[in-house]
Length: 378
Image 1 (cartoon, one colour):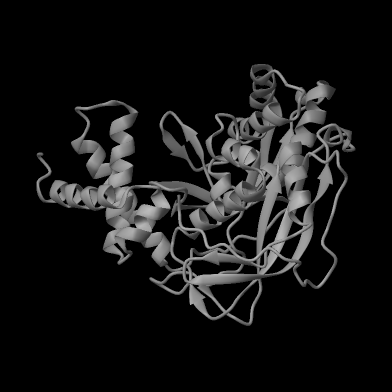
Image 2 (image 1 turned 120 degrees about the horizontal axis):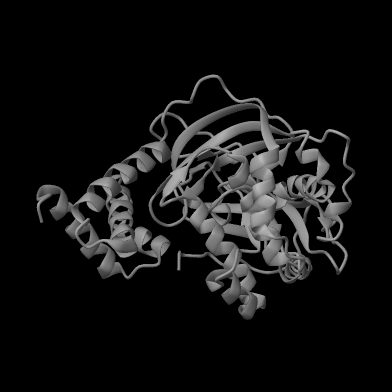
């Protein structure tokens, strides 16, 4: 498991009272305001550290829930964001400034997680210990109101409802073994419905609803940009950021039950995020239209790492085609991630801890990957 720095658990001095919410809450979004102890840099895959820190907080007080969050086969009943407003200059890692505060959002998507978070804040931690970047917790606020799944379908619906979503962190879907960096309606609503069906206690017929989405939901306008990013523990992802507005056809408006669900799932989006890897900062979504820059920023260290991982993954996958199956792809992504991070100067120990690999195994992977680059025929 990635290295986690533990901190004393005593009452935190914050700028406002610690928030609380009703016992029956099933979904909620909590924001932590964080301040670095000194100017520092974040390594490219720092969301792995945030993910590990959160799971360790759960483990300390509820090991059974922690095991489910870490190993459960269902959808994950939580999301985390990256840190807001981090600055990167060309070719460098995100920079944190000691005099500034940064926001980090954690959401709960099930009653057990919401209940744990409520108890967690009765004796909150003082600090998040990221590698080379200890972050003091200055404040806690509720950013997405405490709700139950039964309350979401009670959202008022207009005669001609539309849904406008902004994707604040790179967002992507998996389709036929590849990334789909487009907010195609069926993929967007499928990602929400999967989580809804897992945690709401009231399952919706997936095939019937998605057929309705395919026939009824139209794209009114969009402003999107695509990019390649590192996310999760291995490999890279081609995702998009920006905004989109969905509307409904006249025929779609005839099915009031699905129109109501269309609106309810839109309200659910900021809690559950969009697409995959939402527990590693991808797919952060909010209601409303956010402006998108007309030009892409200069490439950062994070971008360079993502590009290099993608290049190496393609090369190693091509070399291992004869083995076939998911195992070959998994090995190619692991070799690519390990070697790309090593090329950027990260230590083998840090890479091994982040990827939950044995140190000697990580060292061997680097050797094998370098050998494969020198001799592509092997």
